[in-house]
Image (tube, rainbow, N blue to C red):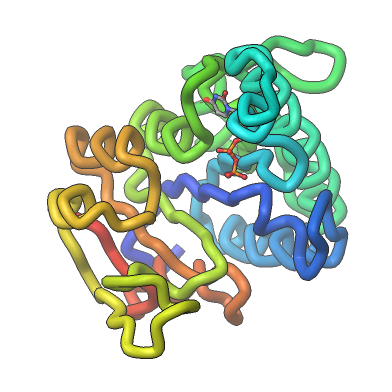
Length: 238
Ligand code: UDP
């Protein structure tokens, strides 16, 4: 491994990032592309943990908005993340990348339970670890689960992969004059109410000094270039 600023990273992929141009579910072309990016990082000696969301299948808030019990709906959302994790594992392994899925909700027939020390061991061996089922608790998001796992596995940074190439002062899709930050502090993200990650996730990163890199997953080798220190996306630090 050479030329990288970070050795161990936690990559947060939203469920929507797996949809591609679709409006629901998983686009295999997208998971294959992601798998090749991650395999490339792993071959360069980067240790990669992944937290995947479930918004492409089900979100608890959507169920609650239709009258469901919130906790019940959140458990459905967590199960959706397990489906995404299995799809990613399949793509990663086809790309030649050894990969473990560890779930915060036990389902031993399909994946391993999340055990922190075992996860660290897998990472040290060079296996990619996908953390499924979020934090295992309702009322949380996978952004918060990503911040939590990043801290737990002692990652050097948390990469939040989005469809936008960083953090802007206002929504760049709706405002032509939106300005992108190269770096920004956690405090400013929270005070300005910027929609990077939810406030719980941002606060957890702030409390534990976990740098967040927000970048566009669709660009060419964006993760690799960001880890090498190129000014890609936005870095959130103290
Ligand atoms: N979820 C949860 N606890 C967690 C993580 C996720 O209850 O620790 C549920 C919640 O209902 C959420 C859904 O799983 O809406 C999918 O996660 P999220 O919305 O974060 O996915 P993303 O927006 O990243 O696709």
